Image 1 (cartoon, rainbow, N blue to C red):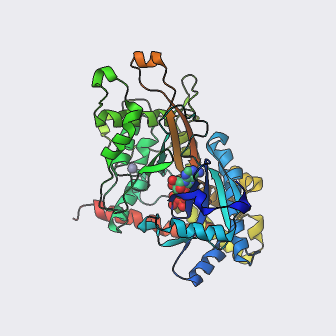
Image 2: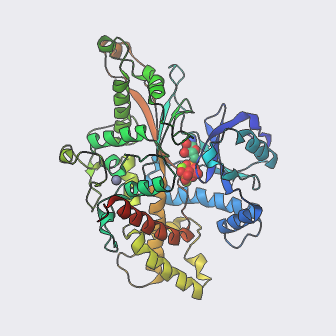
Image 3: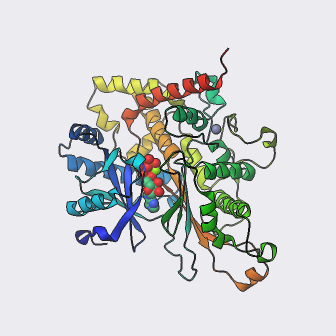
Amino acid sequence: MELDKMDENDWKYHGEGNKSLVVSHLQHCRVLRLLKFPSEDSAHTRQFLASLGTSICNNTAEQAFRHILNIVDYSKYVMKPLLGEKYVHSGEVVKLPLDFVRQLSLKVQQERPELRCDKVMDTFSGCGLCLPNLTQLPLHHLRDHRPPICVEIKPKCGFLPFSRHITKECKRKVCRFCMHQHYKLANGKWKRLSRYCPLDLFSGSKQRMYVALKNLLEEPQNNLKIFKGGELIFSCKDDAKQQPELNDLIQHLRPYFSHSNGLYNGHQPGKAILNEFIQVICSALLSGGDSNRSGEPRKVHLSESRPHCEASPFPRDLLRNGNHGLPKDSVLAKILQVQMLDNLDIEGIYPLYKRVEQYLEEFPKERNRLQIDGPYNESFMDKVKNCPTEDDGSVEYAVGKVHQYRVAMTAKDCSVMITFAPCEEDEEQQLKLEKPRFTYSISILDLDPKPYEGIPHQYKLDTKIVNYYLRSTQAPP
Ligand code: ATP
Ligand code: ZN
Ligand code: MG
Ligand code: MG
């Protein structure tokens, strides 16, 4: 890719989240991730840009550049060591010609879903992030006519908080995702409740994971997307009232699960196809990260808290069945372990945030030494790892816990990508009518730092979600 010869016709719209828009290259397995800004007015944009950078830069393009650099550093020096080398691709910052970025922004505008159009693509800074296209398998030989399938899951928080600072008992019984669903429904964010519960997905029990994945397929919201050959084929509908098309998905998947000819005459019912599809995702999630498995993996039991959420639709009498715990090197165990760095809960963190704020008011120059806004390097990582376990009343303790909390927040908001393609079919396998085998690769993406300034908002939001949940689920006296 030659940066001075960038042509918008080589790129197409790929997808977007709340903070960035992604385009993919038509030939190479590469994507560009570009930041987005609130679109209302320029004053807003200036304010937003000002909030991104440290005060040393007064040039907004320079600030955007620093911001993207911070994203890469954070991924490289903080999240990658914590989550594991094999799962994280940090990418690199690229300086793009402004003309290219402007043309690209015009080109993709019509493809963007309406619900995302409250923000506009950054066309000022000329900076972007270049990453491998994780919906593709670069080493997948084209001998097989079936393109890779990619399942993207945003699993959210997989444990119940166990902090002694918690004031509302329901937080120990019902997980954040399930409580948040009620709040989102009331605020019109979604039209239907999702029955997905992260605690089921993170349980390590095949039965519970199956139910979690099935519920994601029935109501994907922004927690599930499926790609085929790099094209999005399944996600939540722009029109929130419309159900996702499971039948279309089954048609897409049929060629990948067309074994068992003897049994079904090549026409497996849709249910059986979905069933096998879910099982492939499950085994990938329980594996060590790639198709070359070895032996029975060691299980870990991470949670200190109750392992089941009372709002989950999984039948309670089946909970005792099956073995719990995730294999130690599995992608979900890695993510959960980082999420659990939040061991004080926002209720325990907020007072520590205020301690830091008070200290900075008195000693504003300390902001740099304490690395409140980065740089995200080994020294930041040291503060995360070597934070004292007991509160000694120091600002160092408070900063360490706040850093840990922010790292955990990133792990609660990341996505997992499982990309798989059929192994070459050998005749013997066909004759035996064996189940199809897949080669796959797993990655974790969207590992941006969460802003320090966001903590008061998180505190208020937590109160709102919990209070709303209690009001909406407790029958009036
Ligand atoms: P969120 O609102 O979840 O925080 P975000 O704005 O931070 O999202 P990303 O999640 O990084 O943005 O990217 C948006 C979407 O683009 C992803 O959900 C994914 O489908 C796609 N995407 C991002 N990075 C890649 C990649 N390296 N390869 C393929 N697709 C990608
Ligand atoms: Zn739950
Ligand atoms: Mg995302
Ligand atoms: Mg993000």
